[in-house]
Image 1 (cartoon, each protein chain N blue to C red):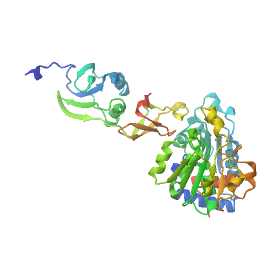
Image 2 (cartoon, helix red, strand yellow; image 1 turned 180 degrees about the vertical axis):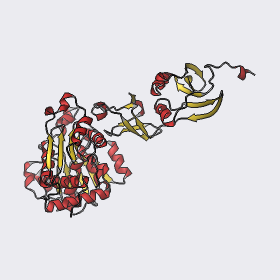
Image 3 (tube, rainbow over the protein chains, first blue to last red; image 1 turned 135 degrees about the vertical axis):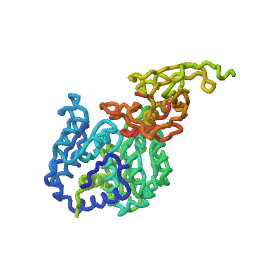
Image 4 (cartoon, rainbow over the protein chains, first blue to last red; image 1 turned 90 degrees about the horizontal axis):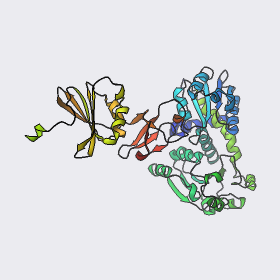
Amino acid sequence: MENKSLVSITDYTKSDIIRILQLAEKFDENPNRRLLEGKVCATLFFEPSTRTRLSFETAVHRLGGRIIGFSDVSTTSSTKGETLKDTIAMVNNYADLIIMRHHLEGAARYASELSSVPIINAGDGANQHPTQTMLDMYSIYKTQGTLENRTITIVGDLKYGRTVHSLIIGMSHFNPTFRFVAPEELRLPDAYKRFCDEHHIKYEESADFSEDILNESDILYMTRVQRERFTDLMEYEKVKNVYILRKNMLEKTRENLRILHPLPRVNEIQQDVDDSPKAYYFEQARNGVFARQAIICDSLGIDIQ
Amino acid sequence: MSEIRKELQVAALCNGTAIDHIPSNQVFKVLSLLDLGDLKNPVTIGNNLESKKMGTKGIIKISDKFFEEEEINRIALIAPNVILNIIKDYQVVEKKKISLPQTIVGIVKCNNPKCITNNEPMLTRFEVLDNNKVVLNCHYCDIKIQKEDIILK
């Protein structure tokens, strides 16, 4: 039986991504499959994240698996000073799979080196959150019918947004064209621009969230511009209302345009956009369950007919 | 001839290794990286010796000790231009340069305070991205560390 962890989106090759998205499609058609009957999955949330945890737990329940774990680290031995190593060793005695979220960066990689069962990274600090990337990519695949040759406009916090960085890496296999729209302080780091250059990926940067850019896009990926990211609050005040999507901006956009957002949103997508058939962020969250079902089964080497 | 008469700055070695051309300010770091403090063999340390190339330099001579490549490459981060003289029967039988290993385990501290390696009793691990400029990449948190920012544990 194949047994593998998912720590970073870079752990997946192009064919891994395609295989898992096709699996997700099957769960989308029928999510209730008792493939984890008799299996125990541990959800170790050293850092709270209700949204991600509910999505994973729904995925396990719909597969007929059982769940142990914690969502509040203050109730665990970690507060007594237990090392991550010891926690993993203990849970290895109980569970067939570990889904882990941790506030420290690299925690998932370390856990995967210690663990005898697969680790699925549900977010490690500002580092990686690969199941989010897979659900983003499944949403692109499902709404566009393909991952190839899409023009993807990413708006907001491109400097700290880990979902943005992982999406660039994940999509890099499929000849995308990126439009990066961000205020000066939150521009995409050079390392990711270099990554695009090395992989011959076309991109343009802009500080201006213009309708011209929107009208040429297949996917609009919105993220939140957070006040606490700014060293200069004057700068924040200047840009806080610039990167906001309003319904009238969608008038001349492509038919196939879909709007994604990793959620939670605050005001960067105005409420009236929700009624547009191009708004896709809530379905995107729903797709998370299917993507996670696929990832869990793939990690455990479970065959799906 | 004057060359023959030239006085040795550090006593000659019968068998062992002489680590030459160590930057003067790194001699004690080299000793600690190679765990020479725990060694029972005779060790001669010279520092602030005259060097044409470097101004001043340090030398460490260790009797009856021959390093594995993996062991000696640990010092490449702080003393990349070191020359290793392998001495047998008072003769230098081999001169070796050291090279930076591809992976550096347990020597460098990660500069990211939120990295798991700074919060668990574990070894750090870095991949060397650029051998010339010496850029390290943390295997765990993926942060990149430039040469001037490298901190040894």
